[in-house]
Image (cartoon, rainbow, N blue to C red; front, side, top):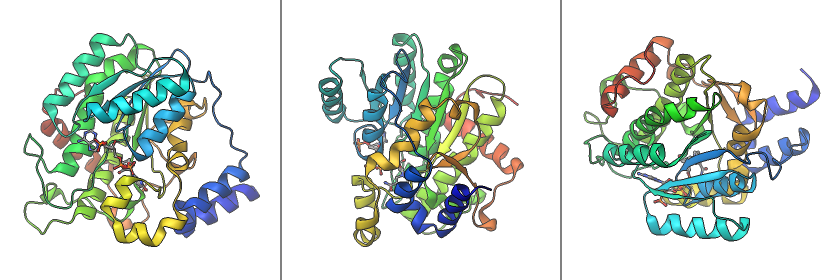
Length: 325
Ligand SMILES: NC(=O)c1ccc[n+]([C@@H]2O[C@H](COP(=O)([O-])OP(=O)(O)OC[C@H]3O[C@@H](n4cnc5c(N)ncnc54)[C@H](OP(=O)(O)O)[C@@H]3O)[C@@H](O)[C@H]2O)c1
């Protein structure tokens, strides 16, 4: 291992040093990162969920700056319009269609799929970014616990529906935005929806994120050789409205050390643009490098567990199996 990789690995072990702003700044210098050129995604189409705030908004900006047509998929027309108007003004053209969709509603996701398939001749990148940490146990319109519905079931149905478009160009990229919080949380197969124990927002969130990563690995395995790659990334800790609202104590304590949204979102754009990222599938990234799936052995999921989760989520999403084994 070269000296730069040694520094990177030591940072990763420190957790706080890695996840907070110093981790980003050190790695950026260490590896001489460059931003994608203005034409890196020219002629390509990217769909991103949750572009109205925090990391999603930062990613939408940099994907737009890389030349992509960016489909802005979110639940508030007003907030989407504001992002659209900002991107169109900064980029000087209008390649940012707005699509209202609630990721927690399967009917809404199905409508979004229909609309994208009707209107878009191609889709090159799908960024699954929308996320929520509910304070209480809430249910989606489909009766699914809200964290699971928003970050697992809805995104699964969205990807299932858009797969034909992603396959169409022979090289689609799927990017799941997860959280380092998932390292601490095991998946309780007997209570995936928090019906038989006291609800904890942070734990429900972390479990949904762990399931999201497990499914991304399963997508990657099932789509191997198809040209479609599926990777997850976690952003470290970034100063966003979502973090401030969902973990106020942590936010106050860590604020001076948090990454900017653009720093947290950097690896999203890198995964969408870098040629080497296009050769990777089924991995979890932080700061442009693959990272371990597990840090706590008790939270590890086996290949059989991942297949089991796939079957469960296919049933919850109420779609035909999009990639049968
Ligand atoms: N910030 C961090 O340090 C951090 C760390 C680890 C992981 N993450 C992950 O990064 C992603 C972005 O988080 P953030 O920190 O940028 O949070 P944020 O500021 O709260 O942004 C969340 C985005 O998700 C959208 N969203 C939430 N529920 C939705 C739904 N049902 N349907 C459609 N869109 C929905 C929100 O839309 P509205 O504008 O309509 O609310 C917003 O655009 C999330 O997946 C989060 O879990 C963040």
